[in-house]
Length: 306
Image (cartoon, rainbow, N blue to C red; front, side, top):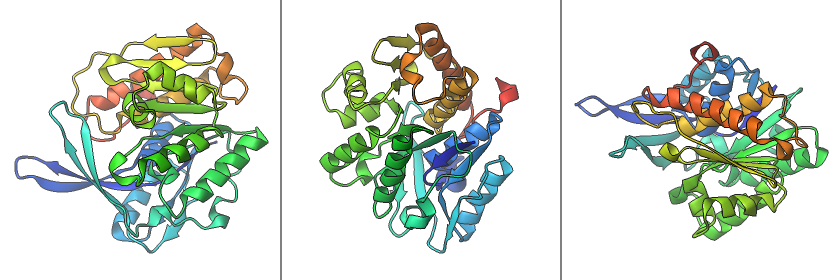
């Protein structure tokens, strides 16, 4: 079982010439969970879903894609909203509506443990930073890391406009990274997290905290995997981009899927991956993300499409 811990967000995106908004299920953790389930991986969402109409839409989307919701808490607060626009290159820009929404109000008993049989726990994004629940998320991650039975994966997926004091947020993320085995981040994430530091130096800064493998996505420039012993770079795939919504989340799903396929999804094995295996893992994740970029919205591929 793979468990994804974090928010589910309703993306409001303008469509057509009239500019009317349509609501789509989204949020990085939900996107990753759906991406994994579509790759035929048994996947649970450990999240908090609103009981409102929009929350029910998020729930229906997860169920339709085979995501296990048995560990989800239901809350009467509204669903989190993100208004999505695209820049000239088709990259997504988000305006969030977060105050008083269901995703952040964790109770201690809701995060006492992951679902039974969890082999990988992936988390990050807003859930890792926003109060009042971020401390409970960090506590669970620290406990799992100390136990050594579950591979802990982190994607910071930073939204600088909504994380509050940047220095405090950076310190919180670094403390969280110290209790993870795998960090997947974009080059934009690292530029915000470690201002002025080159990508590979930032990756080594994370390795210094105890992370075994750092994977960095760089858009059209491809991706890079960094361990204590090697650096592996792989190119992007040339595709016609419709938009990049959910591309990073699809890459994360492909990355975790590839590690499982290679039988390397164990805390003590990530740092020992050789060049060939790291390259194959990056290529697989890149393929999953590239397909997502060829269609609108967060629409990751199913296993048969690969």
